[in-house]
Amino acid sequence: MNHSTDEYLTYQEVNRMFAEQLQAIAEPDDVIWVHDYHFFSIARHCRQLGMHNKIGFFLHIPFAHEAVWREIPVASRLLQDLCEYDVVGLQTQRDQQQCMRICQTMLSGEEIHPYILRYQNKLTMMKSYPIGVNPDLIQHAAAQPLTSTQDIFDFDTLAQQKTIIGVDRIDYSKGLLERFDAFAHFLASYPEYHQQVVDLQIACPCRMDIPAYQRLYQRLEDQIATINSQYSTADWLPVNCSHQTLAHEVLMKIYRQSDICWVTSLKDGMNLVAKEYIAAQDADNPGVLILSDKAGAADQMPDALIVNPHDREAMTRALKQALEMPRAERIQRYSRLMDGLKKFDIADWRTTFLNDLRHNSFLYHYKMPLRAQVSPVIH
Image (cartoon, rainbow, N blue to C red; front, top):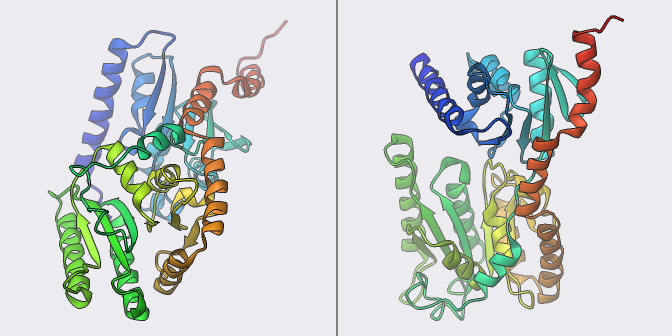
């Protein structure tokens, strides 16, 4: 970890600029919803500009462990900025508990309810709002035919093989190297599956101006090339990797065509690939989801095959189990997973958060004695 004072000042300058733009357009009764780690400090700058709007914040990535925060010289400042929001949303209960605990230990904040923190006479609601998808919209898109111009993997020629789909940015957090290491181990361990299974990977390069990402991209390319050179035959390529960016509706059709999806994140706030894959499936013949226990989605999707992405043997066993899973079990797992997606979808996520931000009736219950304590009325 490298800390740069100049970069931190730039970070604050950018947050200040966004706050100034908000001040220019926000009406007094507008609510403001800020997203992700780029903008920890916007609320503080808004308050300094005299804005009294209700401001909420949602963190899409995992909330870092205390040991990480302890390494950041400006950690207390950033955590104080976080407490300027009225509502802070996290992906999982684990993230929520960690956020509360760290704000207590590093700021001496007071937990006055499992999801209400008091810091310097300011109350902040910190709750878990697991982000969802729109299952009905995805089902409709996935059910449409995949045209030849959209089919980057040519599923017609893959009809006799089991297909595994992975969709990720080429990022160190996604566990791509670990995934292909497990796939190579699977092919070495179960030669009877040669020419019977194909790994389809959509891997979108990102941040390629950063040397670490350039190296990761090259390592991934080398790893895929090694697998294909070792196991391919005249009519079988074990790994078919595309770097194309696809339209959402096309991706949903590809999910529906694929027998297995594996999500092997080493660290992920939620991971919507897992949820979208399930939402896209044919209810009469659904595919199987292999899901990392390091992704927030694992907390909500226990009927997936949950694996530790660092455990190559476990990944290999899960892949074999997925390939051999009977149709009745696939339908049973899918039904429970789909019920979970519908129980709390993207609309519920949005509505629940904004209702808490707009109304804060529960938070108001705790503000009354606080105000009385700070400004007593003497009769």
